[in-house]
Image 1 (cartoon, rainbow, N blue to C red):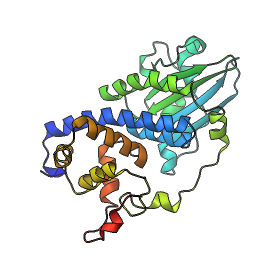
Image 2: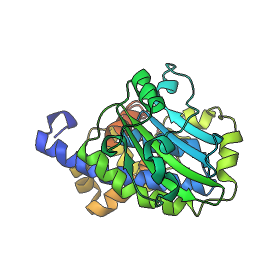
Image 3: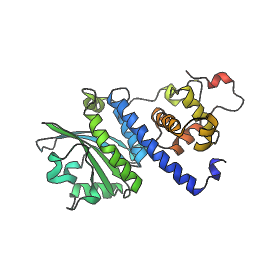
Image 4: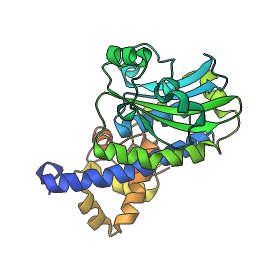
Length: 282
């Protein structure tokens, strides 16, 4: 059965699997960044695309209530060339008097706050056609408060809320164990240009994503149109093993869901008849 012949029930089952695996992949990417092995901005992009957010911002607020703050943001509209960089945070505006007493790992939604939000937030969302803001306090120090803020174009669906609820405590716990100076370095570091290795097709001889042999086999079968169930049967592996491979693939290829991964693989798969050496792993 090809991907185009799948039933709606099977598609829904895959969506649930993708959401679960995508969560694992996003956390894996986040942890890599917190240990300095990948840029922090890359992790914000992975989280944003995985959750369907328009903006993901890491914001550091001055604890004394002053206006000074530092931020790092991934913005989908900037990628498309349709907006200016976001340099503001809205957690203080959203949470009001609870801001400096919030619990790290808690979750705050604009749609669930009883009191009216500030005009700055309303104006920003109106200008950018956004409807929801989700804030996760990460750490409260004596001089600053760190948050991660997700802006969405529409009200959240159930699976998005479930993923955020699962992510919130994990993001806060791991953030407090980050490499020293990570946030300051991320703000000061200029965006790096893509290298020739990054631009190489995933299944090319260069193996730019540095896939393992098992990950390569899964990728190759997916690129040939096999479904998740067919890949599992073909490789004689358990569902949990396949989930682990998919989680690693998402993190290594910077894909946020199965559809994006398959698109990347099919648009870069080796041509038929290519020598076997082209499919070797580094």
